[in-house]
Length: 260
Image (tube, rainbow, N blue to C red; front, side, top):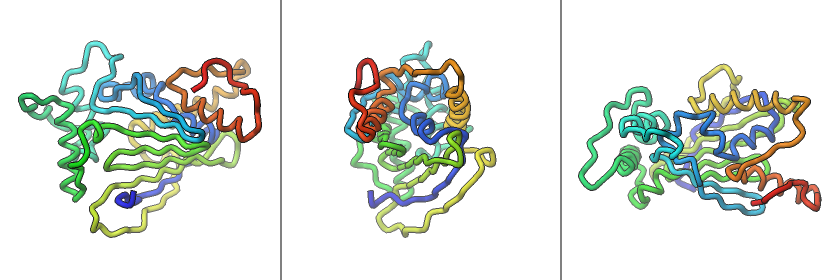
């Protein structure tokens, strides 16, 4: 972890309760409806999940299309989706990555994309030669009770923290972004900003997440809302709720059905 240096910290006021915001980054079930462009490059089904008392971890493989998509995306479509998500990691133009590179005989597009990341990082002085292609394309997401999300790649680390706002219908989302740097790189003080939600673009995925949180918070106030049903893909939300019940001394659990 010493190789990761914090590049910036951005605090954004979000129109949702801090627990709602934390839950929004605790599952991948919403990807198919909220981030459809990711499905061309993200295998969103059957992500491996592990649970501890205060932490849930999901491993999410990128570079492989979701089996939900029919017909199967072409290599060019996968390449463009990869560039839109990982342009900074792979040294690509997100809007115009060009044609899919030539794929050597005996190789495949997944290996080519991993090579792009490895070579782009090597140009920055970051050696990823010890990592396999799968490790380079895999994201480990840790959800730490009660309000921390850690997104980890071999060359990139992001930490999301939610905290209460002035009312129960708003919160602060703090985004800490870390880059892996060469061993001799100086440790600079990170840029720190507090910005209004509508004052800047946070990227396609984050912008979609913020829109979702706004409508989700409104939905919590609907008179017919009395309970929520969660899928297995949302087991990390259940794990956080179980941790909350332990802290509050709630026994037996108020959660019905199968538990993680």
